[in-house]
Image: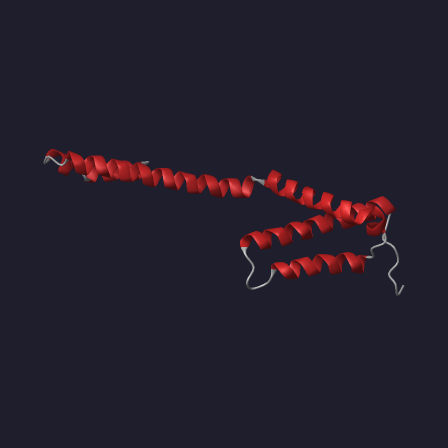
Length: 133
């Protein structure tokens, strides 16, 4: 807002000389710039504060995984299995040609798999033995 006042003060001489149009245009440009700046700041704040939306996406993915695979399948996964699944999706997120939406999708899957591994561990009271144990 102070930038607007500085710009207006700098252009006040044009008004005295009959440049009312210059002042009006300056006001419009400054207000537009201020609105744009505030929208950008608000968007950045919302991006970092919208954990509820992120958690909802993870929860929806977890529901999908649970419906597709079920507890019986999850409860048989070893620590190696869980880490392999998580690493696979994390590696997909590291692709060179990935879009922002694809990156986000892969990271939501990683988070949902981590939740699934914790759920299975808590549900069964531990991890099943690895195949070579």
